[in-house]
Length: 479
Ligand SMILES: Cc1cc2nc3c(=O)[nH]c(=O)nc-3n(C[C@H](O)[C@H](O)[C@H](O)COP(=O)(O)O)c2cc1C
Image 1 (cartoon, rainbow, N blue to C red):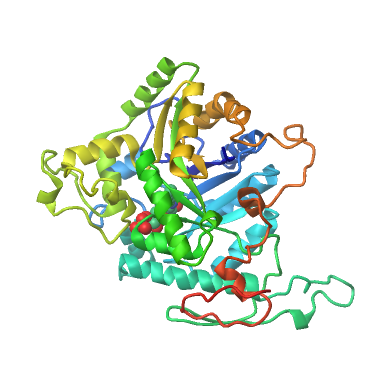
Image 2 (spheres, protein in one colour; image 1 turned 90 degrees about the vertical axis):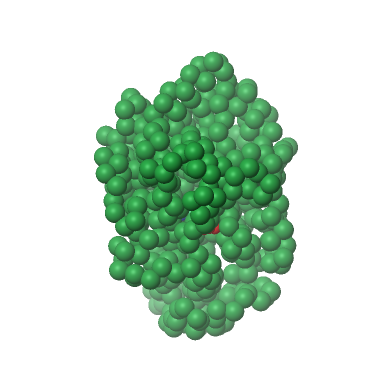
């Protein structure tokens, strides 16, 4: 059995998902405090987790352009702070933990994005990854930024392909590895620094990347969103893909599809790590765990679920007769994210009613596998999922909001995964404060080198001027 990767899925808002305001373990009072996050990051670092992932969006749920009262009253992905600005503080408090942070290609600019991630790569000593998204809550974001014109779902991904190419050209192409000298005569050798030129459909840039090579240069490239166009984007660009597995059969299909697309894109299918979200409710016994899960489900309201669903999909089911089958309200399709909608409409499955959709969304929202049980049971289930799907790891989702879902997992499940050889032991000097040489996030997740592998299309920008365009990447050339 292969060793898995483990991360945690978080958002910098009052509730990661549906509100849990009235539960004693909520994080209403602490979520916007830096100490809350440094404490969580330290806990994960000491336990040996691979990474802490921050999902993020400028948007928030709206219905037909208006902000529903429930969003403000219950803190449904609102308000929110910028997680990227938190990463340096977290890196300072930890030694080995990696950080993955979301940044959208819809409203950001390539040069600024490349510079921010290169800076974070330097500040974290190579422990940074970029979750590249084409954005959720797109209508809200467009209105906030005054862009006004909603692009089509697939064309947002076309822009994203070119955005990533330009960033890769900046990171990989601008500087030779040995360009920096730091002597009394020269900071760097001008013969080993060159301009990047990009003339594409959506972006144009020409100039020299003003960041010298950092430990990984290119942050580890993550992608989330499994629409057909999303998968093609992942096959071309991603080193890791986040999915939200629902069942072994569904996740196995998604994993197989992503790997097949990678082959079509000329990449090694094993070079793409696929990691699923999982909400684990674990306690000393199965009965206690079931009670905790019931306590959690009692927190979730149908009203909040309907508001959040509308925000993600643009499909407004608030106040719609729950008995109506989906076909009667025009079906489910959206110019916003498709992945969530695909959960409810499957080939061959009966058409769900509005009530069934909201009933299911209330319990799982956008989350991955829902796993509840005693320690052995949870470990068995995780092992069966890995064996049955070809997944490479999990990202744990919080339950009541605070850190308890993770600390329970660390105390009760992690030792079992280690005993079974599914997760590596802590490195020597792990918890006693001794300095250890930390691997970069790429080394840790892929077992390979710190730099983007030669088999990734981005490596074609290495070793000399190569103008990037909006064309498909050609095969990697030797550096
Ligand atoms: C596990 C997971 C995490 C995601 N995280 C974010 C995020 O942080 N920010 C965001 O705007 N979208 C996020 N998304 C949405 C997608 O990345 C994607 O941009 C959106 O769903 C549209 O693409 P799709 O139609 O391929 O799903 C996430 C999706 C998944 C499955």
